[in-house]
Amino acid sequence: AWKQMVTIVDSFIQHIKSAIRSKSGEVDEMSQSAMKNGVQDGKREAKMLEDFDSLQWFDNFLPKQDQFIANCSTKFSNIYKDRIDHVKKEASECLRQIQDDACESTPAISSLKLHLLEMEELSHLESALKTDKGLSTIKTNVISRFREHIITLEGTTKCDINDWKIAIEENTGKG
Image 1: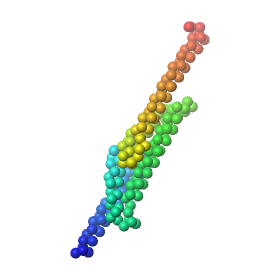
Image 2: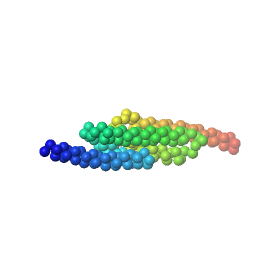
Image 3: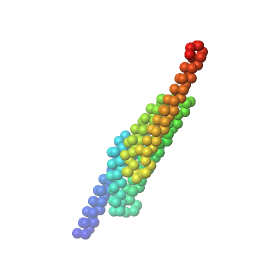
Image 4: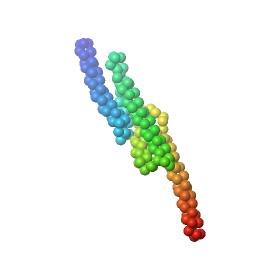
């Protein structure tokens, strides 16, 4: 009877292990897609990461050499953290290009918009990744810097227009 019980328990553990490996494959595919193409649905991806992370207790039922859940969970978190770093760097570069008078700003503005949208999706992952990087704060800072640039540009443009107006009036004798 004891051997039957051991066989049943082993079979049950193997069944759960197989189901978790399958789930691991789904999360791996999702994280690789996010790294390559960006995060499209941060809430869904955060839920999948949290659900997978919650399975780490099962590693205790596996022999040391078969334990994999904690390692996979760490791998998935690191992929998303790398994506967050990538998006932050790209958004900063877009902002730099926008503020650089020598650069055409239209493509940078379009790219910045996409990065800000992805930051919004990535912000849903903060709790799942156990990170305190404050993506919403970073997004707010980027937007603030962009607004400051617009205000500066507006002031510069008004001064330039006024200078042109004065120059035209002086050269045409009107004034």
